[in-house]
Amino acid sequence: MKIVTSLSFSYAVLAVEVGGRAIARVNEERSLGIIKRGKTAEGKDEFVTKADLVSNFLILDAFRRFPGIQVITEEKNSEVKDSDVQRYRADSYELWLSVREIIDKLPSRKLKLSKLAIWVDPLDATQEFTEGLLEYVTVMICIAFEGRPIFGVIYRPFFNETGLHFVLILAILAY
Image (tube, rainbow, N blue to C red; front, top):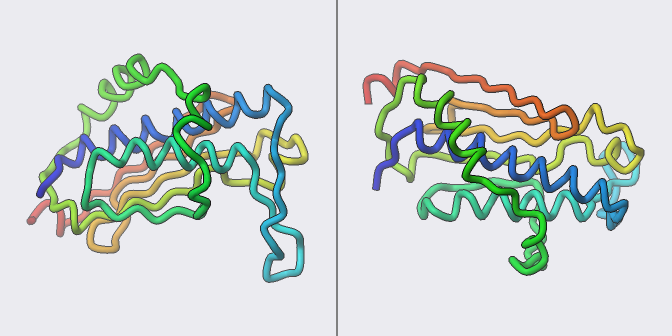
């Protein structure tokens, strides 16, 4: 099965924004649900929050439409269910329209789903998030083709800023 790259890019942008908006809502509720995950290599405590898990679930949900795409994510907690995240779902139709307008301007190719990998960090800067240092919080997705990054998107939910990076790789153009 093949996918048009602009479609996968659109879903990546949509997914980071939906995940980021959920993070902002969890923060507004003042119910972070901080769980100690373990220790870092440096011996510091490592945490995961409700916002990490909700954002991760919503992002993965966006890519479920594409069976065969490999998704690699930092969060492995499968205890989160659809009913747990329902109230954090954003109205994604308006987001989708704004995303499509940007992505439609990028060159597009059809690629095999099996050759794509989606790398997800549903809440980067969890420690800072727990400390209220919201300017550091981002949601990130990278799309790789045959192991090479071809598209990345970073969303800063507390500033409503989205950054895109698109890489033209000769292998894609020749494929």
